[in-house]
Amino acid sequence: MAGVVNKFFVASIFMCVAPIAILYGFNLNLFPGTTGLSPESTTLWSGVLAVVSVNAVIAWYIYMAMKEPADKHEPDPKFLADAKASINQSGPTNEVDSLPNRTKRE
Image (cartoon, rainbow, N blue to C red; front, side, top):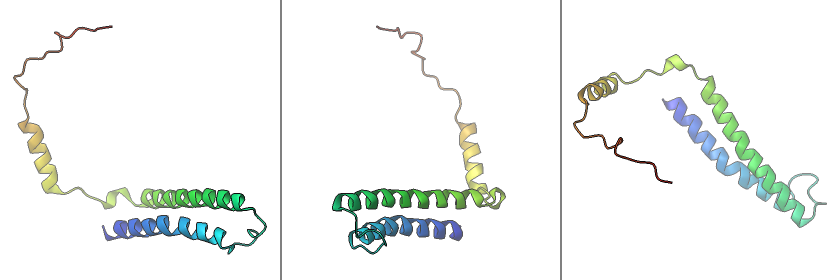
């Protein structure tokens, strides 16, 4: 469980930091080749790359989640017992079904 929380925390941090770092990097001309761009191009490319960076972090998080073994996680036995008991408790209802009384209106 701690591994899942750590991965989520790291992904959340990267989803916040990466786009902001890219935006400031472009605006402060920290990346090579950005000094010759017009202000409109700088804004456009920094925004596009910030969105791409967030999508890359999401893809990395999904990849890491899919890589985890499925048999590692077992459901809580008490939860399963309570769920089965609640399913067995709910029986047929005595309410009159009003579905046949409904007519289609156009």
